[in-house]
Image (cartoon, rainbow over all chains, first blue to last red; front, side, top):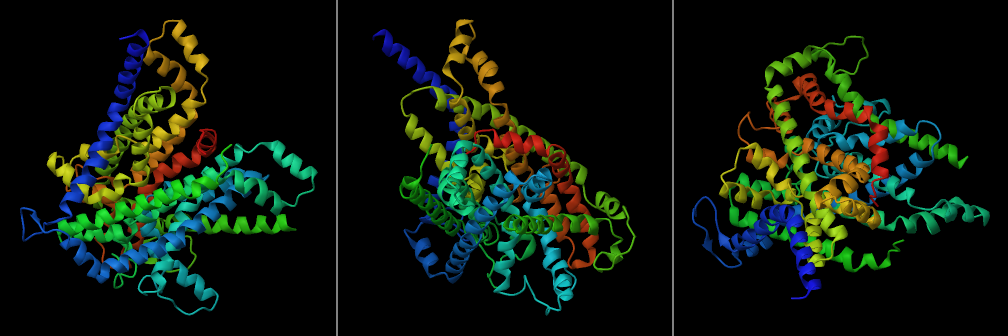
Length: 296
Length: 267
């Protein structure tokens, strides 16, 4: 074995040892559980069957016939469509403003960002009191404007909008921070030359700022999409998925299936669908949209 | 004109954003009979906090959350630093594949694997333990990703110079890389602490006792022990108590937090 090869081997061992601690936890709590769940999803495993019993694709077949599954899936897609673009756009607007504003920079950043550090469960308590009919803050405000009483959480159409607004409030400031960081990486000279050419603010945004922030937008989009699938804490406090599953989301349905109905086979099949969905989104972003981005 | 209009709009947005917090504080300090009425009066009281503090073991919950958050942060920083150094500075067999495997964790975080990880924890006999709450988060792809970006920007000459002076690899890591990545560590610390302070579903599922329950789960149990809105003042007081430490820290160090975030190489 030559000297170079042995040095190579040493670096290989060294690198793998450095990665080992992270790798152990990654395998133990991401890859192994997913594989085990995939296995369990082809079994009947509920309160009536203490030992998992192979039943082929029965869980998946039942799932496709389950109205609640389709309901929570469409709910989740609407929830993502309603929260992801709006909170990203709002986060960008906040960053552009807080980056330029002359007075009160700290005030604006704090006001926009603080919901990030408030636990979702506390957010749910506060917003429950905002949305409560008759006594809630929103109903008082609407009364000032002479509006009719509205039931926000008890109504099948309103409840989704109420949730979306709350989540946008919670997330936009977090995305602002990433955009503030991204803005620092755009060179001042680009703006100076744009100003020399007499470009209008909107043109500068469209031609310079927005394209150069594309990597940030990608990163934020990944966080936002994952969040739209994993944020269900508020349902426990506010609606429990109701009324009539109108506000139920996929992860909360998995939680109910696994820990209220104790149907482990079905909970596994649902989890596999969720993981597959998120990986699909990741793959689409990785292979599709990523090509259109200019990295500098 | 356009500038003035956006200024006013963004100020309105800031007010709208602040409203829920101010309202929660206001309700928490109101006498309980007046909490749901919308009349302005000067009555303010501390009673709600006393009732809450005596009504549920919040001191224990605080301690639990504090322990969980601290241990997770320390372990995450250790594991992420080592892994980030390997990814940023070493060429080794399987690097690309491993990096993609770590990226998968960004898309499929432990929070989504509620049911699968419950099974793992049951097999390890770690249900209803603080260690069980912490374990799934000991490896952080987000942390590795952030630190790798930062380490990549640190010139190789610095490492060479340190090696010339006879520093061992961990001395190089500790004396060259870690100090230069300080803003990234602060930014990551902020994200990690607020994330785990706020985490709810996972500890809800696996904890069963006061000794192990974090603040969020304690708050949910407390809030749900009331059937109607009659105890708004108390629930608001409990909510304020739970969010106050992090909010205070954030308000005090707002500039440092946000600046380290901006300069941490997040992009």
